Length: 346
Ligand code: HEC
Ligand code: HEC
Image 1 (tube, rainbow, N blue to C red):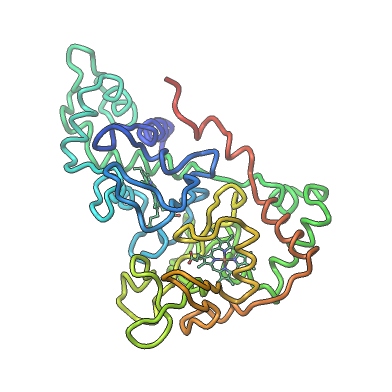
Image 2: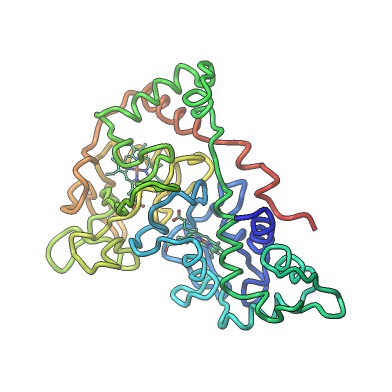
């Protein structure tokens, strides 16, 4: 990682030339002020395809052991990003061939300069000979990926009221209500922190020098549809981990996403099917969501594949307010407005 690579990655993250018709960049679905989500239940790609899953927050994404909602095999940012750019199922940015993207980038002098600064050999390019000594080798898909990933790894959030309270010793950073909510969050009764673990309130995480962790996925009882062998089904476009393993008991298992900046990333869950945090608490309090009508009607609490930690609980009105207040205290305003993460200067 170098400053020049990060600068190039930021430039590319906001660059609509990465989409077929120039209408979409990474930032279309990953907006900084929404902790790099898009505010929609499911995003729509350049050709009108609707993605089955919700755009994920990129908060502290560098630390995730696995990427995306349900894929245990997606481990590297450099590999993940080819899915939105070139993927067909669904079509997101809709590029057909990497050569099309690369020739767009190669034909622009400023882009050549930025690649030169990040990756180039010693000979600076000139407007008369913009390809440099490296020629087409200066701008490759591998380098596009490396730069984007370098930028993504800088998206670090650690300055919420909770962080100031816990890690910076500011005892008054959390109100009494937020502190009570924190206790509830970490309590055995609610068990939130059993799955939303560690500094990122997410699944297992890794860092330089840490040992290898296996990715973890849970079924929280969001659905319970009739399936080929009794109950336990999820909507057909989102079988969860089962999509990758083919195992029936992996139905409905998804990664526990980070809860940092959760107040700004509505709507919630892998398919954006819960509009508010208050309703997320209803889902957990009931030990799984009940849908009374529509094609997905069912009693999630009775899903046979549900994780046993989602067992339901009762909250008084004050407790509910406290827990919500705590979740709001995970918002890091500086992350949401830091100009280093915003669009590059024109
Ligand atoms: C059309 C909207 C859309 C665009 C454009 C888009 N993404 Fe995403 N992004 C998503 C969705 C949806 C997911 C969840 C995918 C899944 O679970 O299958 C996601 C997931 C991710 C993740 C995984 C995060 C995690 O915590 O596991 C990363 C990283 C990411 N996107 C980076 C990018 C980058 C880099 C670009 C630009 C090259 C990009 N995205 C463009 C919608 C989009
Ligand atoms: C068994 C593990 C588990 C427990 C216990 C658990 N969660 Fe979750 N949480 C998950 C998983 C997995 C998801 C994603 C599920 C999905 O989309 O189907 C999730 C999603 C969420 C989301 C939505 C995140 C987003 O970005 O859309 C919120 C908010 C949340 N949980 C809060 C809580 C709170 C508060 C508690 C305690 C009352 C809790 N969770 C307990 C595993 C768990």
